[in-house]
Length: 419
Image (cartoon, rainbow, N blue to C red; front, side):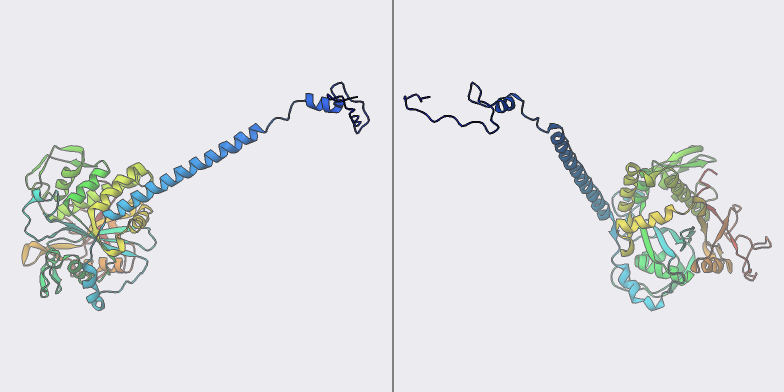
């Protein structure tokens, strides 16, 4: 065998297994191997890994976006809340005079409805004179076991001792005996809290102030509250004109309904407080029964309206604090959310003012202070809030305090306005 140049070439070495070479100079085994197709690439596992990577990336993006949106909503709602920065210092100044909490796990929250004409949406209710009164005052007691909530209305015209208070201009008032809502005008929330504590002996843990505009937004956020009217209402002062019958009130109409005095019923402030209690009970019932607290699309507008509506102390000025309070309220059955007015009657020296009925008022304050159950039952229209004792006779100032649990006139949230 020679190469192309005619030079003898070395013979090809035999294959390792001794098989003769093929005509092309390759072994049969090599030829067979060359004829077999190459192994298929693992396409299916590769596609699966590819899909899993994209799925994980997509889930991560969704979670990050959701977290970002959730954080934005949280910050927005949290920033809506106005903190009362002036009351705390004044309350610390008189800390030694304030009552101690008897049951630390219970909570007492003072709810103040301000009739200020200052601010957006409030000027149309009257001229802003630079002062404000407490149009509505409710002491809310949330029991330690979160098994009940009792809201006690304190009449604005109740004659009480108002302590010396710091005014907005830096001067101080002297202690005086005057109608209750003057405390808010004299010294704002701090003066009002000290007046309530002096009157009741109950430690006020927190407070909230809401104005006209805030109240309307709260009602609108739950799509209104249903009421029933026995006769038509036309009240120019309350800007309210309604037909008789069952109807749903929103915003402006709801505010007029709870503010109206002269054209609904007997025109008394006592009846107006009862109407306010009925409306608030219906509002609580709707929030709890309408799935608002469990539905984010319904809950957000309520939270947005609520956080914009209130001014509160530093202990309730975050969304987390308000959520914990709402969660506590959610666990209370509506029939255990009770509303009543402190036992009162016309003031002996001025029929246009009120005074407490004793010992019934002191019994009520003692039950709340010691976190004991308060029994609330419906009463007659002319009932002054005293309720009845074990013998069925009214409690009055000449009757010693009964040993049994007293009963007070009021209602619960389950009853609603139309019951």
